[in-house]
Image 1 (cartoon, one colour):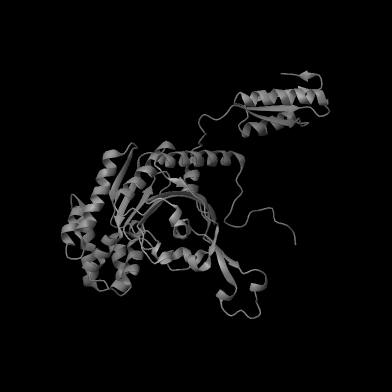
Image 2 (tube, one colour):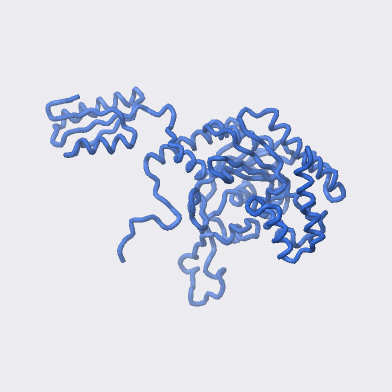
Length: 420
């Protein structure tokens, strides 16, 4: 079989120029999140298949890269079900691994614990621009904080970080899963059908209010419930404050504290923010993960046309590992989407090191070569990035290639010494 030089479908090679930008963005993200008190951790890329398939990951559970058992544990002849041959999988996000990590190490961690986790995740998804089957996620999570201080800190940390990367005029959309459920209950939808309702609602930005109405009716929901549901969205749009409108309209099915907390989050963020963006209540925001229990949020950028970051509260996940529910809330930046935007903009890393290329003629003596290396070492001590390479026959083409890598200064060394 011939070897393939192309990456596996949905994955990609990263060339030096992009890698320089990725390293810079990671550094900015880590430095800024540390200033907000988040502590870096790391979890394995492989998780127990039972943890990944516990019906908390929504559609992502259909996209798991599964790992076969090894050695004597793998017996294909007697295998009947998938469980007989699979025991692990590549993580599809960083939240499930974090919940396991916290459950395993809680006695060694402060409370509340502010975690920073950056790493690759894998989903057998359909590749498209800004979406790959292997991609990096940047997560911050606050575990053990029941109040909305967690949401406020997460939103401020994430938006400040995006501001440090040069982004502005983006939108933070925020909603509450309990508001979503209260709206469905008020309208008369059966509780066991809420997920179906929310999946259809999530298409609002693509198919509009009429489209949502049509799909709900097609799925067998009564016209009375559908009409009542749509009236809520029309009322929100007409109201000066959509949250206050729902607080009053849904008072029989929604705890007053839910609406109050959501307004407090928005007001606190608006009052203390130092980045130019808009935060708005969006009653159509659903978020796909079924593990969310409270506040949910996303960030949209005009440059990308869709979400580049998202998260929310998931107070029930850790309890599935420990038996005791632990308050938890997180925000994840779509690292690959941020990189895609920066590449499309022609982004250059600010304050990059001076890059110098030493081209050394083949056949130069040992003494002369050592002198060249000493010069390079001295320039490195002075802060320059110095590449020492052998001179090619086509020196002009060699320099053109190096210029593409950001080298702006060139020094040519021949047997008889430096020529420029």
